[in-house]
Length: 129
Image 1 (tube, one colour):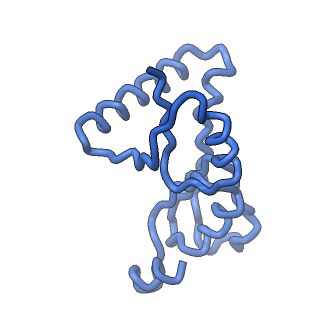
Image 2 (cartoon, rainbow, N blue to C red):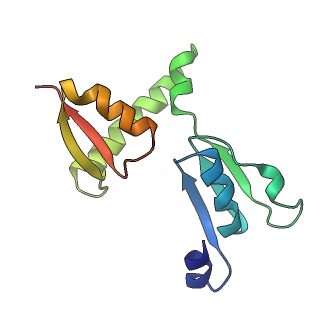
């Protein structure tokens, strides 16, 4: 956080996408600028950490899996389109997926255990062939 504030002359960043945890999302609140945005995937931050009418932060929950649990064909189609667009960006090398390592199918259980402990910095890919 200190480095972010140093690099932005104390202003903070306009947006944070937190994919780690609710605690990390809460910690991120300190580095968001006035009228900034926080999108969270792995848990909502503790909103009480920001005093009302100070930073005016906009919070966004990203619930990608929710489209599969409802009978909303429009939401499911939107999610499929986003997935296709993301794969195109990866294929065009415009987005780097941060692959940590590629594993065999038999290694999946131990990799899932490792992921659950949050000791992985990138993606673990299981090769199916």
